[in-house]
Amino acid sequence: MKIQKSAEDYLETMLMLEEEHGYIRSIDIAKHLGVTKPSVSYAVKRLKESGYINMESNGPITLAPPGRKIAKRIYERHKALTAFLTLLGVDPELAEEDACKIEHDISHDTYVAICKYVNNNSDIRISNYDDE
Image (cartoon, rainbow, N blue to C red; front, side, top):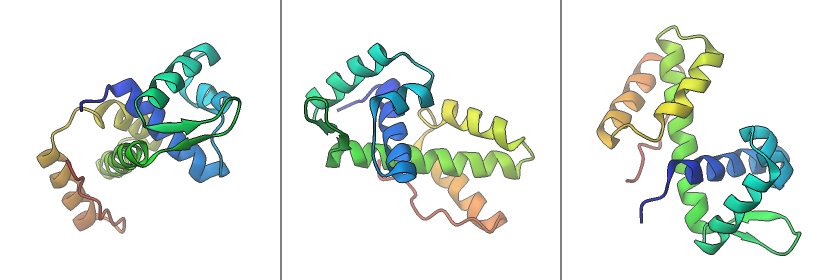
């Protein structure tokens, strides 16, 4: 099933927040993505209905296995693209922003080539070549 870019961004953000804080809260998602709380509520409802996240009424958000898989894939792409752009001399902050824009649209083959380039030209090791 094809998932929309915005849903991928929400799932990636949830994984990042979980790794950073140990929990996922709607308010933190809104702050990270720069969106309103009602926007997060709508997205969370749709992600729950699709089986990507779990959430009890007013409880913490957790990633369900399908959502975690997507989040990891996008986050790995993000990290690899950020490293690649930084290696090319792009300012790290701009590299982060651009990686967010690119991570959804590049082909699997291009992603694999970027991972190989980063691994061969830096101390960074990217082992997840995507599982599309």
